[in-house]
Image (cartoon, rainbow, N blue to C red; front, top):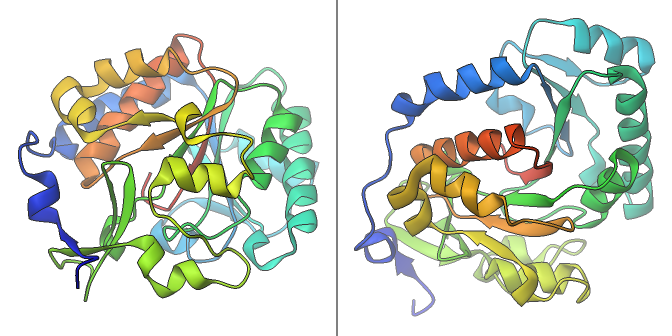
Length: 273
């Protein structure tokens, strides 16, 4: 059991988790002020099971996307199921979607979330690369695998899975779980900067990866997150640590503020963000 940590130990000494409910009104106001759609490109059906009362497209063309953009809701989902497809097919689907989005959106702004797995499986970085190539340069892509109801948290840039259940205090690094042995998407480390280096074949070294750590998130709040994101450039990966919904809310607001100041990001996330 030496490969187990505990939440209590890992979070000791940090400020308490921020209250999500105190930040939600500001997030909603910023989303409304931006007048942007959030387009969630979902690689597996489990993602859309975490939301309700949103438009979900199982197939898409220009007409369907125009209707989705005209809807009053701030977001919509496209279910590609690309995690079950070969990488070449997944890349082609993401490129096609991105090109259609650019065509349909016109002058209307939008953000893209590439929704994937909370245990680090999926076509990364291929899908992010495909979206960036088709949508135009971005300053960075946020990697946010936390899925709190499933017991998946990111602390000290390492991704953990709670065991034996989602509310347990004991945490196992994701590379020590059966998920890491997946025949298509296996990996050898849960330390996310090294995971990025491994998955990208060394295109990004672990030292190239930026991080939003829990000390910054909890002590500095959205202002500190937005300021840190101002330094992102060249599409670099940005690890988001999160152990509570309040942590995610702080990051969401900070991202929105950074984007309002001119930065541009893609989100590679699990369902919660």
